[in-house]
Image (tube, rainbow, N blue to C red; front, side, top):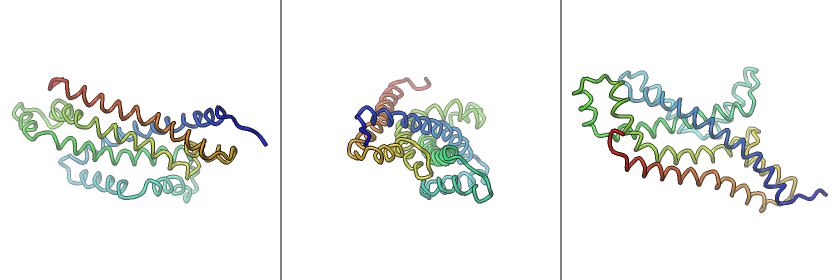
Length: 219
């Protein structure tokens, strides 16, 4: 029977953690881009745009991420299209992330005092100029803590992608456990790696929150 050292276990899990980090990064950046588009639609004057964005957000917030992964992976297969597990995972997590970020940011925009909108109108600024020069910079300060906090949820959400065969940290943990028969050690290391990824994100969010709060208005 092959013997596995602690370093063998840690090394294999760290290699798998690269895919967790990559998937989290792709999903968060892609979700941020799509989420910003959804935000603009959600607060636009066009009723059809608002309804579309609202329906999108409610669907992805109101259904389990696991179901969304299944749809992304198996749904296109019904039409004879073979979808790689990594692509299905990235698409599902990106759309899921976008729905939550759009709603988080909408709340931040609405938290900006209405007087700021009136000030923009008094300066004869267009809607786009008001958003770019006045509203969004102020909303950014409010958005940093919940956005960074949600990035932790994105990292944790990658664990569900193992159900469609994507080999990330938690899936690798199961595979290493099956090979070593040391579940306590393996999952203990998995937990430590997740903590090492998520804890700095939380600390960074607090640092940025303090920095933004200390910055003068308009900077």
